[in-house]
Amino acid sequence: MKSVLLIVSLIIISLRICVEAQEIKYGFTAGLCFPSYSLRNSSPKDGYSIRTSNIRTYHINGFATLKSDSWWGISIEPGYKENGGFLRLEYNISPHQFSYSVTKQYSTVELPILWNAHLNHHIYTSTGLGFEYIVKTTYEDFWSISNSNYSVGTILPDVENKFNCSAILGLSYNLSALLDIGVRYDLGLTRLMRVDLIDAMNYPYRHPAALNSFYSNSWQISLKYKMN
Image (cartoon, rainbow, N blue to C red; front, top):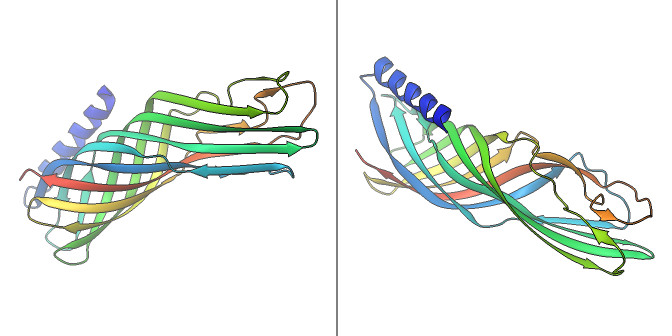
């Protein structure tokens, strides 16, 4: 956390020194997030059914925005965000049947760095990268098993990669001199973990692996309050 604050402070100081003649805005932004898992490099097998969906979380960030005299600008938005997702797997290869659902939620500190393109006085787009560090994980699962003699373990392990990066694309509208509203999509670029989704079922029959790479994507809708 201290390193993130140091980086943010250095960036703000550099912007002020290098572009004294430009417009700098700062303030706070907060809103709802709808993160979900993206499963890539999967090895699906007959008899497996995998479904992912969004959960509802929130974010709160500070921001500092530099706007040039023309149509472009740069923003940094250090803050706190809840990420995660929902997963459901059903296994039905006779005579074995089971299903489970998992919800994981990650508490993260983040640092989005964005390039803004102002299309007119009210509308602007934002593209850039978001850097996250996971500080806490909340885990819930639910099993449905046809044979009570089987034992089960944790479905998803602890996050393998606590440092993550995402590509960001957003669209914002100036409601007033003090308020903006915006929507944003974060596409996960860093793999959170590589998991065999059948591995948590412990019984003496060998199964074909259900390997999946987990990434985190998120929709976000926010209000931005400008203090100056």
